[in-house]
Structure formats: structure tokens, C-alpha cells
Length: 75
Image (cartoon, rainbow, N blue to C red; front, side, top):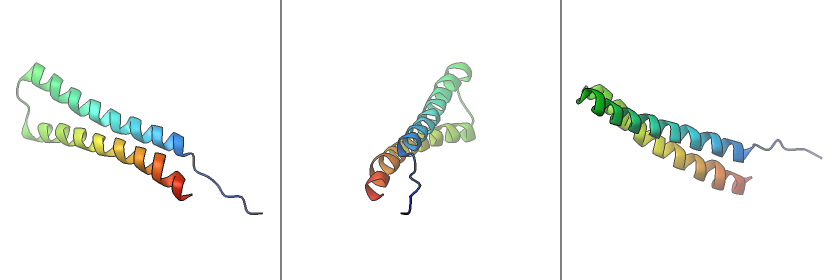
């Protein structure tokens, strides 16, 4: 009988969610601290921090839905 190697979806979901959460917290915290300490930030820093907030949300939700819901159902 052929044994299939199953992926650990729970672990991948947790890692992906924590990665997205980390991106979100780093971006939001960077914007908050940057504006509190320096007042205005250069445009490239503002773009980088805003994009990391958005990317963090996307990564967190996609990892939960992808590895937590869809992939186990397709296996």
C-alpha cells in the first residue's frame, strides 16, 4: 500500500498567520513610532510601512483560508 506524505496544515497555518501578523504589527508600529518621534516620514518609508500593513493582512488571511480550510479539504 502506498503511504502519502501529508503536510502539517495546522503548523503551516500558524506560521503563515504569525508571519502576516508580524508584518502588520511592524508596519503599523513603524508608522505610529515614526510619526510620534520624527513627525513626518519620507515618502519611501511611508510607502514601505503602508505596504507591509496591507501585505500582512493578505498573508494572514490567505494562509488561514489556504492552509487551514482549502488544502485539507482537497487532500
